[in-house]
Length: 255
Ligand code: NAD
Ligand code: ZN
Image (cartoon, rainbow, N blue to C red; front, side, top):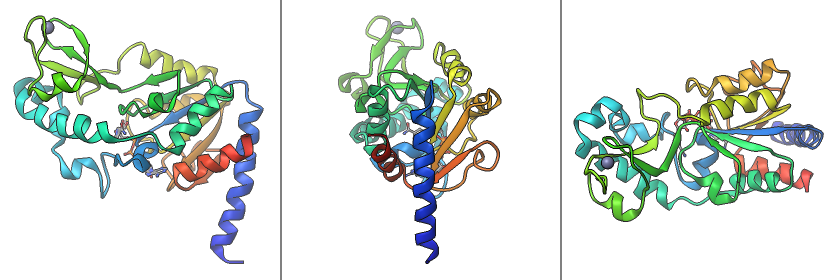
């Protein structure tokens, strides 16, 4: 038997085991990172094809943004509105939403800001790093949807006080938004199965969430193209492969 064939047999067994964990769990939470959106055409930030190899990451540093909103917004618009805006949910986002509709998943904790879980139909989504879908005024706090009309004018300005608007996702130098922070960590207390998809587990403090879950005797199922910092430390079942392919296989077992 070739090593490729052997690997597929192992994965199939692991898929069945993972499906059993989910079927028999009282509270499964999904935890996602940039990897789940790669097959929607959004690359991760870091690594060989990462966005920060193409763009200057200082556009999302709070200090730079405050000093040079024009410069920062030029890049922010290109990445998070023109580029992210074209992406559509893939089979992995859709599988997660279907699992919730079937009652097999209670919610999603995501580090992503691309709105693709919601577009796929997920209802309970905790956006740990906020969202690009709304903007807040840096002067008066007014909160408005990030419509194309508003974002097309650089820098976008508040309709009430003319202050510069900032996207509601977490910049470098900013804290994690509430209530997403508290509710995400609460999932780590409530869950008995964590399904971790497409994250290196290196971004603090989000990366702690699966560790807190594991400390609470939660089973960890991990989907990733390659081993992450979780794999040897806390993962019970590692499903190696593309998020869409693995989630499709999991759905075949669960439906
Ligand atoms: P990361 O960039 O550090 O790592 C991505 C992970 O996904 C890697 O472990 C990689 O092996 C895996 N991966 C890549 N393609 C995959 C695929 N097709 N199927 C399964 N796994 C795949 O991502 P991170 O850990 O989430 O941290 C980066 C930070 O930047 C996070 O806060 C993240 O939310 C944010 N970010 C968000 C977006 C988005 O909103 N789509 C995009 C880029 C970065
Ligand atoms: Zn204002």
